[in-house]
Amino acid sequence: MKLKDKVAIVTGGSRGIGYATVEKFIQEGAAVVLTGSRPETVEKAVAGLKEKYPEAKVEGIWPNLSDYDEVKAAVDAVVEKYGKLDILVNNAGVSESTPLDKYSQSVFENVMDLNVVAVFNGSKAAAEHMTAQ
Image (cartoon, rainbow, N blue to C red):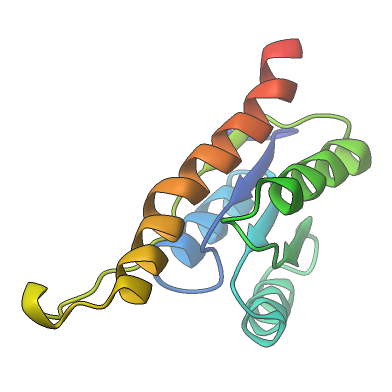
């Protein structure tokens, strides 16, 4: 168990690559907090993981990753509960296949918020704890 006693946060962990990452971390002994964009998808992912791995330490949250205060509060809560944070996987992201001439400002802002701002927010909030460790 390579990750025994480690604590991880995986953004975008309710499906796809993020879900597979969460599952592997659980198999390797980590306590994992996954994030998703909606409570129902997060709860479904956590329920599936707990059914498959009943002894797993896994839970889900759904902060707005583009809001630093929400992300910081979420990371702080994880550290308060588990006593530390060892791993952050900034997996959440979105792609857009709309042609540039049809791209709207709101679509662009959504892509930037999730693919850039969210990575900064999570990394900054996690780094405060990881640096202290």
